[in-house]
Image: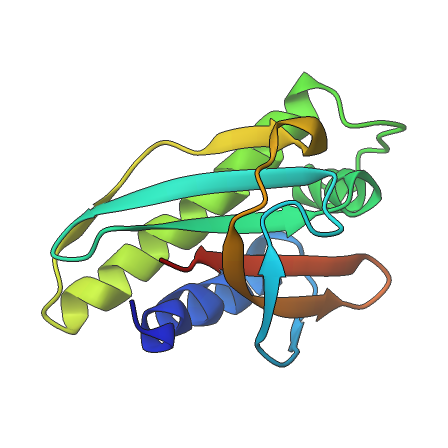
Length: 148
């Protein structure tokens, strides 16, 4: 698997987050990590078709609450309830759908699986490539790709 396949997801994440969360992400450097890393939550999405791999979005619960609140027009959330989990899952779905369109425009046909939101206790220790996106006044949102 090539690190270059992560670029459509990074581009899409920056674009979608800026549109729906109203914050322009600042991209960090690619690093190696594990699925669980420092994430309370991980939203995994599978790709099938001409490419087959898993992409995920990792974040702390505090960041998820802030992002979900922003997505709901600033509605204050005290914790990540079912509505907040749904918002974060939908954000991940929007990013992945947009990325699959970018891949299609490059001649690569893929389908995405529905998002699967996992809590930290359900995360494995597989190696991943990750690129952090820093969101001012919100926190860190990681884009992860499973290696091997």
